[in-house]
Image (cartoon, rainbow, N blue to C red; front, side, top):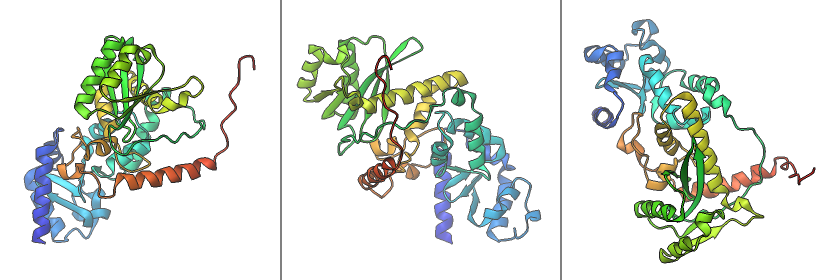
Length: 344
């Protein structure tokens, strides 16, 4: 019991010290520190045998009272911060800052925050977001392309350009982790493109392979000299097989959708990008940031450094299982519609 209490004190301290959002507001929302002390004793002595013995703020947690811990102005369910009703709107806005689907938001929230009804509230938020509904993609099966993703982060990256709001961006996606970098480009000339790539490679390391389309920036002699000087294998997509750069094209779609929805909702796209990188992938249960850096990155949501460490199970095992499962599932789906030629 004493060891558990000590562990809880460490968790509370880390959450207070390491969370950008004003987590101290949680204490005030639940009635202040003195009230918290009384509630903590109530839970610890198992006096809350009936709902009527609890204050209104705590009654929604009656059914999960055995897994609730109180202390230092916070409620925890396991290691998830229990968010009071007054702060839930703010937490939902942060979770939805990348304008991801309900399932994606729940994967992000599952290990960080909790309140009764969070699942339904996030589902309703995604369904009622006008910015999301206006740019909702059409469901259509596309051919499955299994790419060689490399064996480590930054080993293989895809490149493409993206235009949004009269501004050009260089999109760089890591094949291994799906971690996406977005660089604003004042010029898309070869020299400027090379300069941006040098900055990124100095930060993440030089990839063994880069994949791009046949844009003039990438086919220029100067770019070929750069790739040779930095000992990089440069692959370009052939006109008949544009899907060979499909990873970068998919990243462009993701970023354009994020920017469009953020613009329509008048939210900060960089907060959305932060959440996008920290949201666990459906296939392997780890986020691009976890795979890229071995940890989640600090965000506006409450979390502890320990929670941001990579899970014990290796990404390689999860990836191989995902690839095998994806192939079996894809083979059961109807074939994609035939492509029409000019005049048909």
